[in-house]
Amino acid sequence: MKLLIDSGNSCLKWAEIKHGVLRNTQTIAYNDTDYLRRLQKQWSQLSQPEVVYIACVAAIQLQLKNLLTELWPTTPLVFIQSPSEKHGVTNAYPKEKSLGVDRWLVMTAAKNQYNGALCIVDCGTAITLDCIDENGMHLGGMIMPGWTLKLILIHIP
Image (cartoon, rainbow, N blue to C red; front, side):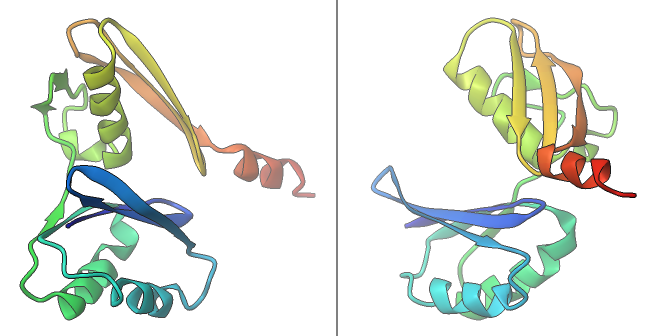
């Protein structure tokens, strides 16, 4: 079994891949003050993964590494970062790791599914927009507050 972890801005999501099939997708919000203990309890019920792939915001990377190492000390942990080029997509950022790994993964997945130029809009805690041309060149993008954050900003007296 492979464990996939997506640590975003407001919640952490994970799923297992068993025999090439994505299964058991779960989510836990960071506003749960006891989320690390709950993660440990839920993950301790899983069979030991052969590898863990992690797309993570830097804020909790060390906490995740410590928890996963405590649970499965011999399991390889792969923290995914945005490269300059991979999977048919070329990163436009001069410092490639400054492009959020979430945006990178969405672009490479979209390019893998569709031919031609693409404009990708992702609406979560943040709204991101990225464009890639028909050759897989990232043309740039933007990031802005998501709807929830915009509503909060609108209602500030």
